[in-house]
Figure 1 (spheres, rainbow, N blue to C red):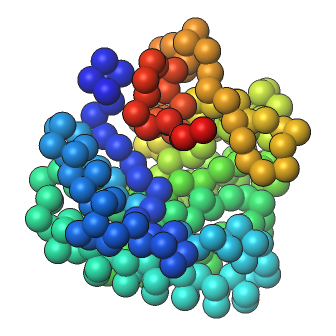
Figure 2 (cartoon, one colour):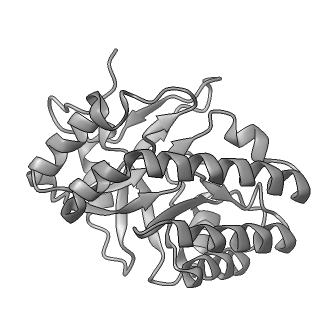
Length: 243
């Protein structure tokens, strides 16, 4: 890790549906502690609903009902882990809401305004900074996406946007138009994989070393993170998926 100049790790979730990975005294907590013991800092992912992407693509009223319950479960997860977070506070940068907002699901200004208000209400329950991420589908204009991300930042959220390079859902010229519209305070998630478009379920391969080095040589003003570390093109990567 030190050779990759990685200083922080963002975890997507600590609970996925009913799976809690041992909770705050189990194997996941132990692995987090290994990271912290190597002088890395942690953005701590909360609860993720396996049905999120189906449930969130709905009308504004259904979104409000669904998000009310989702935020309640995330708050409960935060409370469950709070003793552990407090114990390791000097290594905890904040918590991550695994929402993956998108213009596909929040295509209208009314939907975006509603989720903005709901997120603003949630911040009072957290003593740590809160990070969220977004991805682009091309449903709204680059200027509208830039406006939305800045609104979310103004609420007090740490905001990152996936660059879309790995998923290939947008043409490069269009994708760059969106990215170049973002203010410097909006972070970028650099996708260091290539999605296999012919597979029904998500699958991807890692970049070549040359492609990866090109990503790492980016000199933009945006804070960047890599998605995900299991795709690092290094020998004997301990984080890669098993066969």
